[in-house]
Image (cartoon, rainbow, N blue to C red):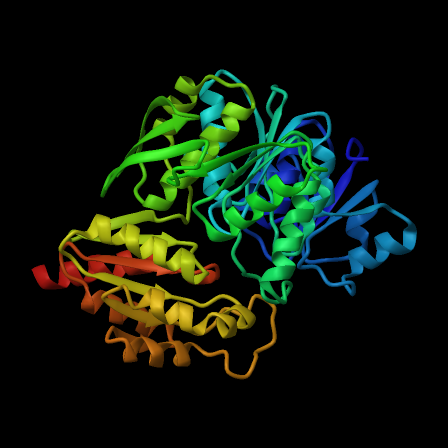
Length: 465
């Protein structure tokens, strides 16, 4: 089905562009469309994709299959034309599932850490002399690309649970990093989320790697153990004494982390990471455990992990002006915000942490208002932007100003500032040498980093003159 010309509606998204790039590497003709141009689209054009800006029914005239992004509405003219003409239409997940057929595929799922863990696994496997295919929801700094068509028999894919689409993958093996309620527009309860993850477990063919330090992961692991119908190689990991792949002797610092890995009571070795954050110790261990399940050499896997250079938008350093460092991070859930600020605290030492946070989606903001306030209050100063709706209609009670009030009540300096220009000025004027400024969220807040660096430089030049 994906060997003949394929058209992507919404080709510029991370997941869609990854699949398009693999098909181009396989020699398939690819076309696509999107609402606006981007660097991602420019790179796909360089590889040979024919891409139009704007949606028109003529764009699909030569396609044999159409792949549609979840963000595309049924009223889209290209989608309507495909359905009316009988051209097969696949979702992003369905098309990725097709690409994975015939491989020893590993789907990396979980509420948090999917992108980093998938990227770590790809780098670690490459160190073993294997050339895996991969499709990732972010861009690893090591490869500078979110996907690759390898010549080996392994395919690694980030598996998104947000709309339950990961249920179509039927992977050879899987990682579940954690199970925590999010995407409240889709999951109405923790019970529904757990049931969906258990359905995902039932779709796995050979092995499951799961974190038992996480409460939701531990609960799911116990369900797997008690289900006699499942014939999976279950591998647990974490700092827990009962974990099969156990983490110990953890030391975290501004420039990375160091820890020991024990496999079923035998010390495999010491792991040294170049990226900070205790959560990344767990991510690296998940990748190592999956590599072991695939039969790869533990020493080479550990060496690969030590070379990992991180992922864009995951505590990504954008620049340094006057010893004020500016980072960008994708965190958009209270647990992720807490992990990022905890990492920043290790890095900043005596300086201040100034966070510019943009809540993502009205439904998530309303559901986690208290959690956002509590996690953001760990910073020294918070600047809250308006909510990035991501296509959702506004919901009464979902407001950045409400989060600001709750942060203020916890004693942390906070401003609700709808103006991006003013928000930048607030951060720049508050920052001194050795401080960190972090732009944080899943929306367009990521674009502020370079603007902040420019203003810091201008302010430094003004002081000198």
